[in-house]
Amino acid sequence: MTNPSRQRIVHPEWSRDAVIYQINTRQFTPEGTLTAASEQLGRLADLGIGIVWLMPVHEIGELNRKGSLGSPYAVKDYYSVSSELGTVEDLRAFVEQAHALGLRVILDWVANHTAWDNVLVSERPELYARGWDGELTPTPWWDWDDIVDLDFAAPGMREYMRDAMTYWVREVGVDGYRCDVAGFVPTDFWEDVRDALEEIKPVFMLAEWESRELHEAAFDMTYAWSWNSSMHELASGRADVDALRVYYAWNDRAYPDDAMRMLFVSNHDKNAWEGTEFEQFGDAVEAAVVLSFVSDGMPLIYNGQEAGNDRRLAFFDRDPIVWREHPMGDLYRRLIELKHATAALHNGAWGARMVEVRTSDRQQVLAFVRDSGQDAVLAAFNLSGAARDVELLRGPVAGTWRDLATGRQVRLEVGDVLPLPAWGWQVLVRA
Image (cartoon, rainbow, N blue to C red; front, top):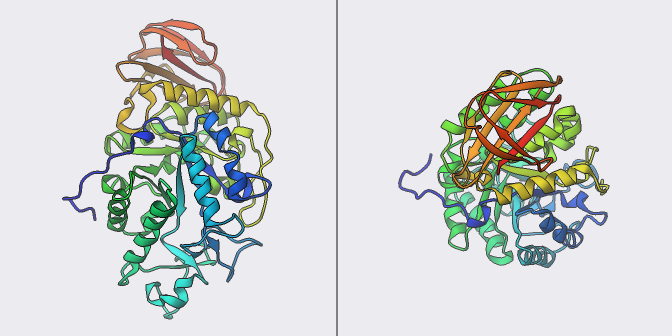
């Protein structure tokens, strides 16, 4: 439970208009190393990325390993860097190169569980949870047989994990963490860690979880799993736009005003186990990407999306991304430029609230305005498989706007009609 006397977190200034980019280092380059990945940081900076999230970099367990290389989330030693990826010095060089380019780096951190052969199993066995038989146990109910659970009620557990997390910020210079299954770990532990990290430098913390309490004193941003699932249901024809309205209603009223939510159409879990964004969203994929940028939230790009990657990347083995020029890369570049240039689209309380525009096609069309007072964006999405002429019935639409796609100016009033193709979108910026 959150301590009511604890100060609310302050988001680092550099997260104001940031876009986050996930690197699966094993698959990011043909070499699969940190050194090779660092050579791509200039490309990411040129694209406009602000935060680079590295999947776990630690040595991977061998006992009960899955696949030939194992899961990066089965950590063998929290103070190590996997020899598959490089060395601690390679990681430090990666972070320094990122900082020189104006990028920030967060590490993926796995606090809930370890590999079966983690050094703690022999050195600190009292830190582990036990099953009904008194033996080490994987996380119940999940197919995670390559890991065993830690026990955060055990004396010394919190101190060990806190010290390990401060080590990488203090000694290597990382700028925060993405915390795996954050809700499986007590919230007040994360709050204590946030305090310890902030004593070293301002950090950014991302929780793989959706609980609003995590925003109070621990995390800058949580996953918007329900946004992704609602968008998927809609794209699959199993829901209408009301599914997204439910997400936005909760986000607008139940979460703190400055909470950041991570909007994504893919990530390592989705890609590996459920399918690429093209499999997940079909003809709606472009609309989903655009919506992730112009609605309230911080957009995620999973490595390869800008190259139109259409393969499920292997999770436990090497499977390098095939890089290529692709229209999705051009779309991402335009959207990132728009986000940086438009205060209304900035993250958290820096950005503007979404104000719904009522239209003649409520069940198939989502439309809204975000107005910061100095600039504004009007966005309309036809989230159906049929073309529609959409009448704007009510909302702050009056004025002169510039079409993001064409650059043409458009004068609008309530009662005007927007033609939208199947799964089409229109983003207008106040001229």
